Length: 169
Image (cartoon, rainbow, N blue to C red; front, side, top):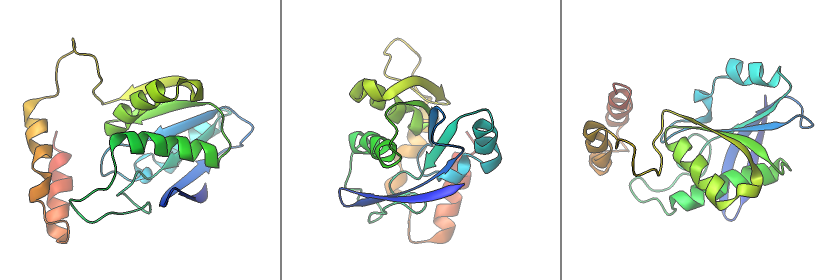
């Protein structure tokens, strides 16, 4: 594992990598409020051991990347999709296999639409998509995440309760 702090356009993105840069790249994008460590080191190393260069990173407002005032993000999903391109640029990767989980899957789809020349393949895990003919997200999940403004992000127990609660789905 090799950590790289990427500074670009006034933000900082924490990332790390596994394997050799000469191998085909896999960019792993995790979901909302989930640090890069959710892509476990053993998993990343096993991918790298198959001849891949694996990169994982913290989205904004997560882990060691730029944090904003709770409840007042100063960015969009499009900005977050472009962050993935910033990561690829920092590692000098022209094209990558992009793997997104949950919200990371939505970002992966946006990357494929906004930067198709940078994407070799798309893999989506536990996510939704932009296809109108597929079933929508369950209402209980939408209700849970639509009440995020009520969370006291300065209170550790409040945050713990939220994170544990989201894992029950």
